[in-house]
Every structure is written in C-alpha cells, then in structure tokens.
Picture 1 (cartoon, rainbow, N blue to C red):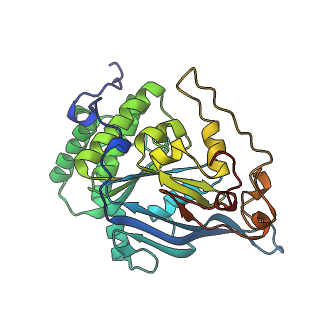
Picture 2: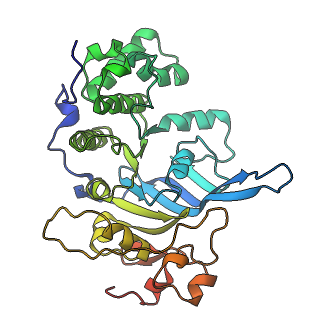
Picture 3: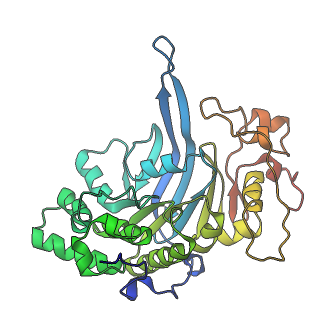
Length: 354
C-alpha cells in the first residue's frame, strides 16, 4: 500500500485561493485574551547548599488579542514565546500578573472553570512527528479530547472525529490508520483536527509549519486561513519566520528577553519598524524581490541571560542607540501612531529615518 500524499482530498478545507488573514477587514472587535503584567519565573537550583535563582522566562508582558484576529508573536530563541504559549493554554499558571481568557481570569479559578477554558483554548505543536502517539490509531488520537472533556457515546465521538478529518482535508478511511502511514503535512492536519474537535474559540499555533517542506507549508497555511474564516477562530501564531508572519498575521508582537518591545498592525510593522531590535530582525529576513538591496543590521553581543537581565532596557547591551537613560530606566510600551513600542531612542527621536 502506497503512503498517502499531502494533496488534500476534500476541497472546502484547503481552498488554495483563501485570502491572506492580514487582508481581511479589521472592524472593531472584543478582546478575547487580555494579559496584564504577566510573568513566569522558574526557580533553578545550582547545588545542594546554593540558594535558588529565578529565571525570568516572561516578565511583565501586557497585550490583548481581539476575537477573530491573528496575533503573531515573534523573536529569537529564548525570548519567551513558548513559555507564553504554555501559559495561554493553561499548561502553566503565571507566576505574577493577570491572564484573562474569554472573560475568565485563570489565576485562582476552580478546576471546573479551568476545564471549561481548556476546551476554549487548544494548541497545535511545532513537530507533527512528535505530537502524535505512534501506538494509537488516528481515530483514537482525535477522539481523545472528547473522551477527557465530554460524556459522548462512542458512535458520536467517531462521527465527530470523521467530521474533523473532513474539515482538514482527510478521508474517513484515515480514521483507522496509524501516524507512521502519513506524511508530515498530513500529520499536521491530524493535529489540527484534534485541536478543533472540541470547537475551541482560540488556537495557539506554536511554529505550526516550521518542520514542513516549503510546498506543504502553503497548504497548511491555506487550511488554517480557511478554518479561521469558517469557524470564527482566533489565532495566536508563534513563529520565528517573519516571511510567513507577514502573510498570516493581523498584528505582530515582538518579544525580547521575555518582554514585548513592539506591538503593531502587520502592515505598519513591515513598512516602518520602530524598535531597533525589530529593525534588525526584519533586515535579516530574506527578500523575495531579487532586486531588493536592503541593508543588513548586525547586532553585536549575545542575548543576555534571563537569570540576570541587564538593568534598564534589556536590549541596551546590543543597541547602537543606547544612552545613559537606557542603562538605568526601563521603557514601557507607548503609542507611536498605530504602533506601541518600548524604546527611549524612538521616543526621543534618536533613530535615523523615523
């Protein structure tokens, strides 16, 4: 028996003409996620007699996500993207701050409230090969959230699982097969089917296409766009690939060393990035136009340790515009047109070209 291909077998779920998410109308909507000074600090022990130290994975992050939009979270490794994803999916509880999801503040809520919220928020992981249990058939994998969170009979669970398979472009006969019989793109479709079977309002997409071939990435992104349009989903899209983010996001939040440093509509961010770190990230993104000759901005130094971040602005050791104020005071997110940016150099007009 030959292995299935990545080509979808049902057209509604994977229409190649699905409009980019950033092109949709941006009418005023209600915030479905609100984070206020959210922090996550891990205690690390360095020896039997040494005092534990705190690793500040996320520190004082404040942002909101509007219902039906796609917020992309970007930044280099170690900036806190995945930690934020674990808090948004209630795998972890914030050490400090308030995180409100669909009107419920998760800190201090009872088990029943948290169980309800876990049905509201689901996650799609980066690696489709590691996200599925190789010993379970696809049907059992997709039905597992229903077994845990509902009391549906077996026949009804199967009906919903086959319906979810159809939603992501797979056939009913795939229900009884094992994950090793599928390609990477199809495994990610199975993971998406598992994520939507509880009819969530929010999907956290943690690098959902980075482990896939480029040709398959486009199919999965089209599928996600179509599902969002038909099911009214809100996406939190975590990625390091700024070329992908440009085509899927409505707004972008740039993080550095656990803190948001710039939040902007996607068109404004790519047309006129303000924070020096954002400008450096975008300058490193490969251009699709062969005639484009953008100047590469090279950052000096290494990413500081989250155990002992530098005083003042955390970016000051690598910033070419840093002055004495940047070494002693921490900038807060302040509005500059449609963008909110945490940078004294922007505030004081010290960056050329702005």
